[in-house]
Length: 434
Ligand code: ACO
Image 1 (cartoon, rainbow, N blue to C red):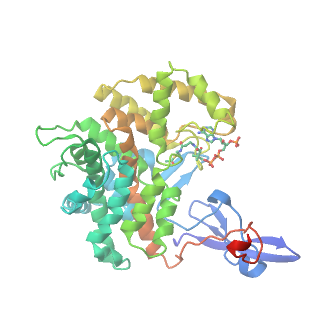
Image 2 (image 1 turned 135 degrees about the vertical axis):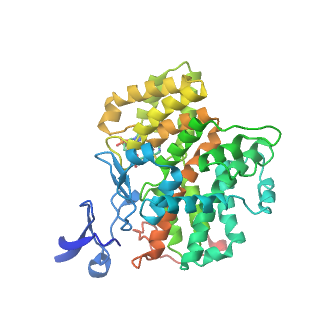
Image 3 (image 1 turned 45 degrees about the vertical axis):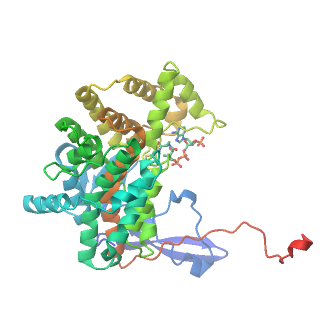
């Protein structure tokens, strides 16, 4: 719990002839929450909030977002400033340790990360055991939990030194696991990390270099990738981060917790939306650019189709990350000379959707994933690698949230309640008598 939480107010609930007074918490940005932890003990009631749209699961000092105003800040710093002036590893440091590093602190952090990028050589065989068409997210999640077998010190979750080395190993090795899962899928030799390259440039090198030829990373492409990683670095209690916290609340090690977060991110309603966006744009281009047809499909309640890249649980005005990414997409397409037919369709789709009553009424705006896939694609990433890149970006946020949870004296094992709707007690009938 942060020391900026106030508990001076109360809320009252009347039920069954009784009245219960409950404390109201107020955070540093004046957000208020009713503490219902005594509700069941005192009234027999539990709360029901399917999808947790109205449930606070923790207090946190890491990320602030205001969905109505389109505000996103990491440790108080606006995303626009970080995206314009910082680097991904500096943002990672900020999220995890709470303050921007001095030059000396940043150099030491970058050097530590750089010198842990190799994965254990035995893990080469691990990649070979998957089918050639294995989705890289499945390989990444498996490799992440697999690392706990090589580093048993990660079980010491209350030992600050063990937490520190696990933090560094995860940030350093995830790009290597991600790139090798791709190399395996395309049958190319694994490319080892290069310590003379920056974090994003090294990921591009491991993805796209081959041992037989020199490979030069374009600085503007590495910069664009670094920007995407910054924009994805944290987003408070989203589905994957809540998963990391929930799994971590059982006191399992950080590798297992992060691996669970990677699995949650994979879904098309969450991080997997960037892959779904490109699939949709490709289908629209193939069908002759009929944007209106897909907008109509998204509005049809019987079609079971949502326009990927539109809508957000929290942002109901605009997603500030989408605004930054849209500008970057323009620059990357220029730098890479990538075919921009999909970008044109994306712009058209955005325009049609934003002026459509259905989308306006429901406050459905392009989210971070609407344009990120176009950048990944222009860089040369295949579609099934997009969410791997998102996972690398989200990693510092997951780590910061896991560390905050483990360090908090308030943390309890995550264990929601339910309202049972099944059959009442009945007697077992032997199989012959059924
Ligand atoms: N296309 C069409 N209709 C939509 C869309 C969409 N993309 N998103 C929401 N709606 C509609 C819903 O059908 C619902 O309509 P109704 O009131 O007539 O029933 C209404 O808008 C409210 O939407 P919910 O699904 O209740 O909103 P929720 O907060 O539960 O879902 C979500 C948010 C999952 C992001 C949703 O907007 C969606 O599925 N979007 C597409 C997938 C996507 O882009 N996900 C990435 C999110 S960003 C991220 O995770 C990094």
